[in-house]
Length: 86
View: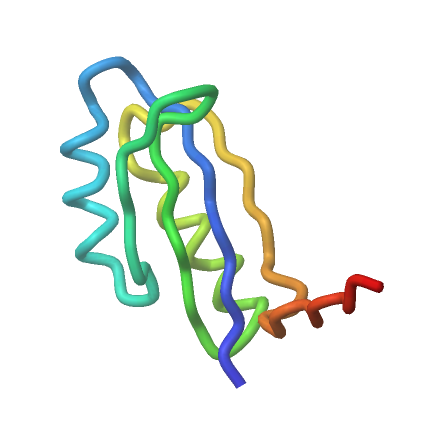
């Protein structure tokens, strides 16, 4: 079973590209993209256990110019059932 998580990052202005390049070299980072809004980067992580996800987050947090992060472990990957409209 694979566990997935999304990590939202704030970083120093202008550092987004270098951070994304470094993140893409880390095994377990499925995707990292620059976004606009409250956060600067969103990354998807995938690994075999929540403990390994935690280690991935620690590696990411060690990258220079990252100021803060928010990690969200995916609780369920099942699509919700559509409700029948009556």
